[in-house]
Amino acid sequence: MYMRKIILGLTMLTLAASAQAQVALDSVGRDAGYVQTILGRSQKIVDGLQLQGDDAKANVLNIIANRYFLLSDIQGKYEDEVKRVKADPALKERQQVLLADLANGMNASLYVHHFELTAALANYLTDRQVEAVKDGLTYGVVPKTYQAYLEMIPSLKSNEKLQILNWLKEAREFAVDAGDSKSKHGWFNKYKGRINNWLSKRGYDISQERKAWGERIAAQKKSK
Image (spheres, rainbow, N blue to C red):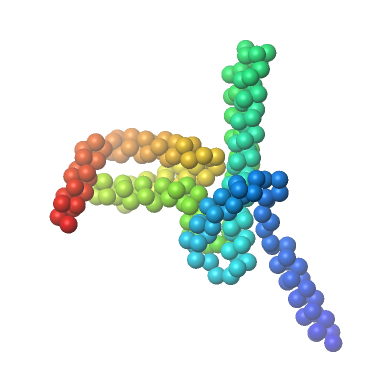
């Protein structure tokens, strides 16, 4: 009898924990069409993870969608404040200072929430799958760009390859928080400039490497 009570208690605790683990979609008060667009975008990322179990799929889907909603809210609030400051003649003399403060405030909000995504996904995904989600949120720029560097400069040393990959991943951490595609690509472009400058200092002629790469691609196409 005592053992049955223990088993029953453990079962109830497990069910309670399972119920608490359900991730709610932050869709209240949002335009229905916008919500469906975000869910569709998020679903494509989830589909690529090949997850087992409907609960895991649903929770990861909502985590990703909620991330889109959060970034949109932060960006939207910032843009509304920028419009207000620019439209108020009384603030003209202090406009640049106020706009800088707003930008700093937005960046502070993004930083506060930055680590939430990885922490939430880690409840359901492996490290590699978390990486895949981040790539999905940033258009797969990291693997595409890394592969491009490998093909453009075949003579890269192993430590140089690692540094390039690490910088691209660092750029992705910023890009994950960016509210639009232009801003996301802007972070990668900034880091690609850093990578190119670093490679140039190490003796690589980036222009020549790019030209030779283009010639190799053209030759391959011609040979098919």
